[in-house]
Image (tube, rainbow, N blue to C red; front, side, top):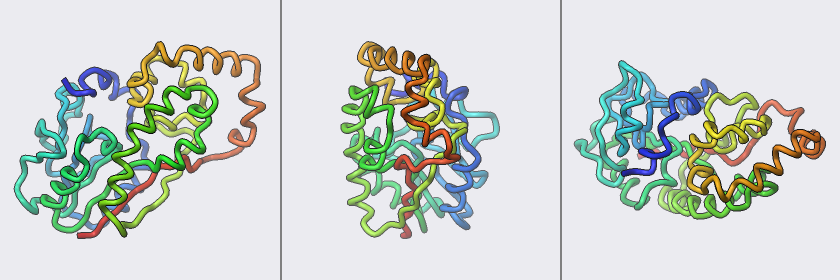
Length: 247
């Protein structure tokens, strides 16, 4: 069983693609006429020119909408597609779950003719600026540190790749870890937490004390007072990045 066989049950409801992030990914893909989506999940952010999706979890594959590109159950480290079968290969919020990042990147280089596009996060920015981890859920911060190492490996492997910041809008439709930076009450919803791998992997028991304190701070207005600056912002850089490598 893969991780997402257990935590991916609600992805179609909590992890809907945000059109602004989708536009940023589309811009990064440029004029690529064919794309393979690696670690495709339920199909978020797949452009219409996607020719194949690679995903290890059947739970996630089963949530792909009708009309999506055909999906193959496989891991990034062993992609069962022919060499140079697409102009570009993309990977969205998935590298931190790969067991061998070097192998995954090598496979993406093999199947793509022109470009690799990754949507990921830079751990130093993320952990340094995200109030949820620093103030309420340090246990999740420890899990984030472990998940961050593959992202560091990705940066080393791609070397001089172009890196573009992706500020997260305050009303982001995709419920990933920092999506609710201006909507803290969302983190009190167990369905939302179930769709965030960082929190799901930490476990409800370890999160309970911090979530209780967050609920109390929201009730008393303490959170709003402490983060009044955030309430004035339309978007925030919490470390999410597009990484683009030309082949």
